[in-house]
Image 1 (cartoon, rainbow, N blue to C red):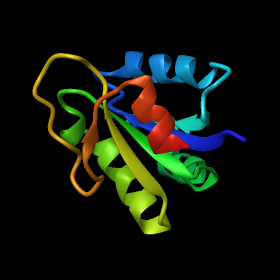
Image 2: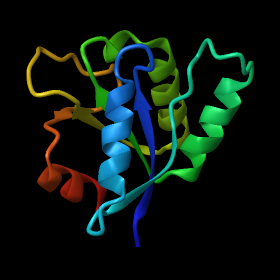
Image 3: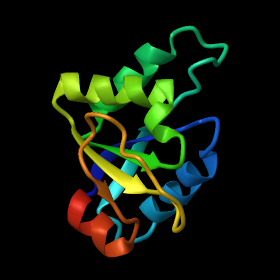
Length: 123
């Protein structure tokens, strides 16, 4: 059975990472399925935090897709706090090959994005 995950990412800079992880979730041997993902903080929907929290609570794991500015993204910081408060496991995956990436505070260590890591961390 595939684990339900919530994908947190920097909406302003890293939307492509969401698409990539959604694609990997669809692979037959994927150990996870995406139940929800980050919502734009400034979106017209005034209740984005309620919707994000509901998505996080449906997940067993929150995957934080890390780019250059993720550690400062207000929406990601709030989603990590929601996951911590709910006791949901958080895994940080570096979204790109090149760069110097900072971990999101209070979200655990950074892992390289490769299929073996995803399978091990999300199984």
